[in-house]
Image (cartoon, rainbow, N blue to C red):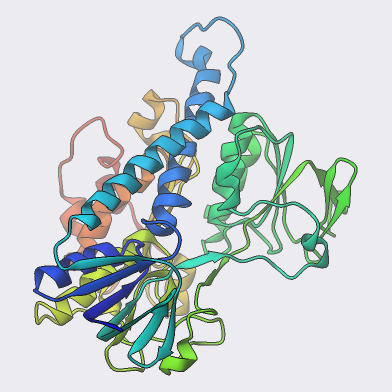
Length: 457
């Protein structure tokens, strides 16, 4: 039996920095990781996918060389093995840096293996049993795979397994028209695959306002991606050509035949094999660990951080979970999950930057709104770069003049939206931005003009 002051389960985004704060406060800490340091973001998520997105964008721009008056001899090709090698090198550099940092951390003991609670204050890792007063569960999630009988024998990819691909699928069928699925759809289309997206809902990225969903679909279809929404009876089956996906749509053929299949229909938490019952830790019906605003579970001395708590599914929310726990536990502050403003991005090209509420959400809450819209065709910076797809949209509370939400679908949208997010955290009225003078030529400089032209909606 080994005893520590604290045990951190999982080396994703929240685990290592929390371990550093705890050891820095003089506490002995065990950090347990069963698979690979860095978690989903570094190994299967943000880092590798955005590296692939960058390669796909380079291919796309190269094919558009004539649009910019540039002459390139010969056909533009994509070496998928080289694309994968570049991605792998970027991932390896991040993992190696993290490994070096953790192994040099005084007061930290690193364990490799699967952790499972055997009692409220005790867990087992391999042949070792560890005890502590404080536990921090940061085990993340994994791709959801439906219980379709055909999938037991039919090959398919998830966003994790597709990371090993070093070839070009002839026709990739993506089941799932949300953020992960759409990023891979555009990426592989730009690499040279035929791509079809199958979505059960009425439209793509259904959590967004309809005008955002429609604009995203238009961008993808313009690049040759086929989109099949309203697929109410999705099923898969082997086919001589690879895989047959039954879509049962209201229009179009009832079946799509592709060479390869990517499942992108959500994620599930890694809680089913942690022995949570032995520790008395409660989960909801989907398997997420229940936490309060300070990320504490129902068991004193146990916290849950990152994707596993169902309070955010992003790297930045996982990092903020670490900040909340460290501030409350070590610094004597009072920080809460409810203090943060929803923010995320869809990394198609051009990207969608989203913060706060959608217009639909604001209306459901009974807010009196002012809404400003501007097509990217009005943005000089976008015209100069020949990247005029998309639009900017801001919604403001007509009574308080506080910004409620922003949708920026356009060149630099994921970066430009950050300034609006800061304004919301400052609880400043829209006129602060509306009267600001920004650098020309930029995308951000048009936001004051957008706010000045808002209208009741």
